[in-house]
Structure formats: C-alpha cells, structure tokens
Length: 296
Length: 262
Image (cartoon, rainbow over all chains, first blue to last red):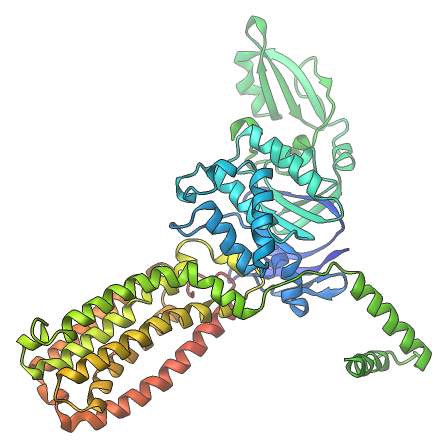
C-alpha cells in the first residue's frame, strides 16, 4: 500500500499555498508538521481529493485518486480541521448520517458505531446533542466518523486541538493501534502529538516540504545545537534576544534553567542537552509561534 | 469484462514501442492484475436507493414537518368552504393567494439546500463516497416530493372552490413556484456562501410583494386574457430551472471549498 504525492502545487490568485510537494506515504503514522499557514491543510485537502491541485497528482497504489473516485473514498477517512455538525444531531445521529454517506450497510453501521463509541469513550453521551458536548468530546466524535469505514488511509487535520492531556494520550494509543498496515497522516503544529507515535515526519514550511525522515533521524539534525544553562532570572530577558529559548524552569535562589537552541552555547556554563523534535521545530521555524502541549 | 480488459492491456502495451506483445504475456498480466484485485479488501457498500431511504430520516423528517405545517395552512386557506379564509374573500383574490402560497411552498427548501456549508459539514461530506452533487440531488428530490404534494393538494382544494379553470389554477400556482425556485437556485450558485439563505428569503418575499403589487396595480395580469403569457413564462421557467439545477450540480462537482457555492 502506497500513497504517492507527485509535484503537488496549489496556487491561489496571489499566493502559492503548496509548492511542488512530492512525498511517498507508506503504512504507519506520518506526522505533517508546520506552523500555521505553512500549507498543511491545503495539502491534506488535495490528498483527500476535495481540492483540485493546480498541478501534480496523488496516486494510491499507482492509480490516480481522481480515477479511483468512490473506490478511493471507500478506503479513506478524513477529519477536517474545522469540524462541523448539524445542530439537531445527537452523537449517534451524526455517526449514522456519516455512515450512510460512506455507504456502510445498516447491519454493519450499528456494530461499528458501538465499537467506536466504546473505543473513544463516548458511550455515555451517545444520545446527547453534539452542540452540547465539550470541544474535546466533539473532536472525538469527529475522529469516530473518520474511522467509521475502517479506512486504509486516515487523514487527520489538527486532530488533537481541544483535547485535554488525558484524551490526547488516549487518542495517541488508539491511533498507534489503528495504524498497523494503514497509512495515517496527522497534520499538527503541536510537536508532542506526533513525537511519540509518528514513524516518520514531514516538515512543511512556506508550502514546501523541507525535511522528511523518522523522528530519530530528524532529531539527530539537532545534535550539538540544544543547550541548557542556568542564569539569574533578571537576565532572562536579555538572553531571550540572543538565543532561541525552548523552555524556562524556575530554580532556587532566583535562578532559571533555560533550554535553548543555538549553533554555539549562548549562555554561561551551558551544557549540551539531548535534542527532541520540538527543538528541531523551533530551529526550523525561527521567528514563528511554537505551541507547546502545556500551553494548550 | 475479459474482452475489455484485453483491449485495455493491448492499448497500454502498444504505447510502449520497444515491447513485444505476446498472448502469453497478456494472459500472465491479466492473471497478475486479477490476483492483485482479488487480494484487496472487499467492502460491501449500499446502493443509491438504500442511501436515499436512509436520508429520509435526516433530510425528509425536518423538511416534511415544515411542509406539513404548510399543508395545514393550505387546508385552512382553500379547504373548508364555510369556515375557510377564501370563502370570505371575493373569488378574484384567489389567483394572487395561490401565487403567494406557491412562493411559500418553494421557500421550504431554503433552510435545507445550503446547510452543509452553513454548518461546516461540507468538507466532511465531500470526503465520503457520495459526491456532493449526488447529495444535493437527493436533498432536492426529498424536498421536491413534499413540494409536489403541497402543490397538488392546493390545486385540488382551489379547484373545488374557484370558478377558475383548472389550467389557470395550475398556472397561478406553478409560475410563482417555479420563479421562486429558479431565483433560489441561482442565488445558491452565485451568492456568497454566508448570505445565500438571507438573499433567497429576501428574494421570495420580494416576489410575494411583487405578486401582490401586480394584483393591486395591474389586475389585468390575473385575468383570463393573460393566461397564455403565464403559460409561456411557465415553460421558460422550467427551462431556466433545469439550467439552474445543472449549474448548481456543476458548481458542486468542482466545489473546491470556494466562498461562493453550495
């Protein structure tokens, strides 16, 4: 099983959202990392077949998805970034509606819905209106609809936004289990979401894929560029202008421990630290916003 | 099927100039293709008729409820000889009443046609097996069933009450109905997504006002002598309606999540 993206480009009037992207997705969890506006959603929509590329093509096992049509959608699950629902729908109504759109036979629909409601701990709210659920629960309903047709290819655009840390961990586990022999592509700007579950990551910036590799290999790129140093708290503001700070922790005696990325140690008495994917992200997206798990 | 496959393979192989095509290679390729096809996971999927019947619950129920309310109004307006509203009015009022009522029948579709975009469901629905044009056609069909029933009931009720010919009653109902449908369809195609419902409602109310104004200022429009013009306009509206549906489906097929559209 292989999903091949070849020279995919999407141009709008005055902007190129996705610029000549080529990528071959094989079974496993793929993380698509990038800052807001990097072109992740546009790329995802084109892979989902709901946005026509300006040029380039997407092939599933060597056949263009346009040619495959319904056959592609049969094996495809998609959770868009902006998840909507009809206000009169309960959780079960919504899943039954989506099941009918996905062409699932009635006898399979109820079984599958029960299974997913258990998996995503939505059993207690199955008869509640979606509009009355919390953002995290609504997101889980969205994930459930994407999994309804037991897809071979699962595309999730910012799936964890609105989930609390516990839900996020549960989601990661479900996904890791689900991804066996399937292609799962998760777009996110929350690095920790994909750090633990993605087999491979593609990093996107300004509409282009700038790096593709396993998490370990990508992290290796940061060897010798991640540092940790302790400075008096009042000097933090000064050093923030000279180095890219990843995290700050308060220490005893009015000091702060600073983790930062830099070609050379920028703080006195700095020691090299073990790099993480988040460090690479911060390194690649210098000057752009970083969303840390704690901040969500 | 086998013949088609053979022809396709031959055509594909002929595109490779250096390749020697033999019967043996063709058979081997066909066998390999068949095995690859059979090794894929087989998925059972419902037919369109089953999909349509399942949509009744989600689309039919709310729209038919609204149309049911209008049906009661039809009985109240045209139905009861002695207690009905029309019986208290002069028969000359009936054409404009029929026209306005027909516009209200057409208006029942407004909340249901563009709701995918309004509630942010479009992207999720687009990524499913059923295409957006097909989903739209299904909705139009389900809404249409109710509308046809309403128009028919109104027609029969009015026929028993008025001295107008059945042909005239049909035209007084159909022309405003078709005009409202055409307007709403084109608004659906061309108006900005966020304003379609509002613009369509405004259009229908304007149409009702126009019908009433014509009745007040140019009553000749509703006289028997004008029936021929109503007939011609009706045919014209049917043509425009077909074009409108075609444009709407065409737009839906190439939707690309543009701000204007479904």
